[in-house]
Image 1 (tube, rainbow, N blue to C red):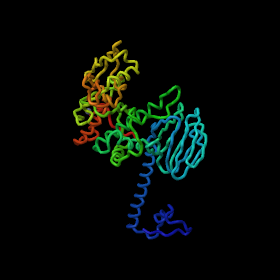
Image 2 (image 1 turned 135 degrees about the vertical axis):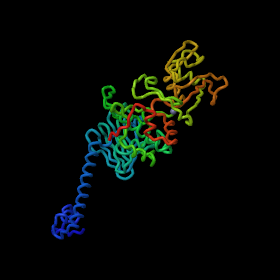
Image 3 (image 1 turned 135 degrees about the horizontal axis):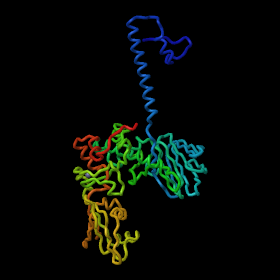
Image 4 (image 1 turned 90 degrees about the horizontal axis):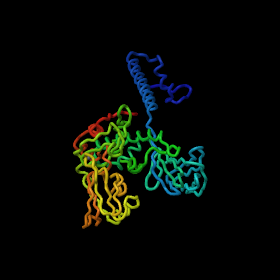
Length: 429
Ligand SMILES: [Zn+2]
């Protein structure tokens, strides 16, 4: 269909110019009318569809999550293209560095902060700083972050908090928490578990207080919560897994659950009750025959007598020389509950989780361990040897188990209902 340029000289793509031919009665014929009605119907349908999409999008936006991504003593350096810095509370603009730039931020000034720019400017700020980049990424240390960065001064340290769209956060963490090389179904299950965990923590942090103050972040970027190394770690397959599960979370009784997960359960998953004394009715123990291929299914860690004595003494758990250590209590799945530390001057019994923390959770990978004294010395010559199964706390989804299930053709919904049997998958937005 053609239409003429309006006499007022308006551009033909103005809405009234587009609609005018439909309003004209000249050139009327039943055939024209039919096609015109169809075009009008398409126009109305597209308009209504767009309106509905916009309404839904407005009703359920993707949440913004706050991740603590770095903490540095006294000062912090931030890099990026086209950096904008504002004083967060007053929104006063402090600097706009075009092109490639860096900022050096001093946080050891008793609550006040100082910003030095690559252009040679220096300015003081009263409180937290808000940094954005028109280039899209802000670098802190060796990682780049999307969206907004807030920098706080806390006890003389600089704390960097990334405020980022939750879906982008999940896309960034998948390749750190799993591997983008793993099966798509395992990645989709992981995306839902990680999204659920984040939503749960966001709700928790909204009511949390620390010495009367609200924490300025929802999650830590380390193994304390979920490992997140920013946009550097985004991979195409991980982004697809996030897009295909957009907004989906695990719920129980209509609410997002605390969706714990871990590397390798070693044969059975655990309940949070037995690990932390925390009762969560939706997390049960299930048998897992899928994680035997994990490199951490069986492990051993040996440590020199002098080193283990020093570590235990520093925690006040050893009096005199260390004569021996043994597990004195296990739960019905074989995980250690309590460990006896036999010193020459006293014998002390402690929780196995504490022993694991003292030795380092990357060394003693789970509480499913035994301790032996080896006069010959273990792999690195150490003569106290921890031998165990699995890696992580054992609660919720076993990641190596999910990997195998995905490789065997199980869908992400099967994987999630296996490890979180009481939960449902719900689309939150
Ligand atoms: Zn497992």
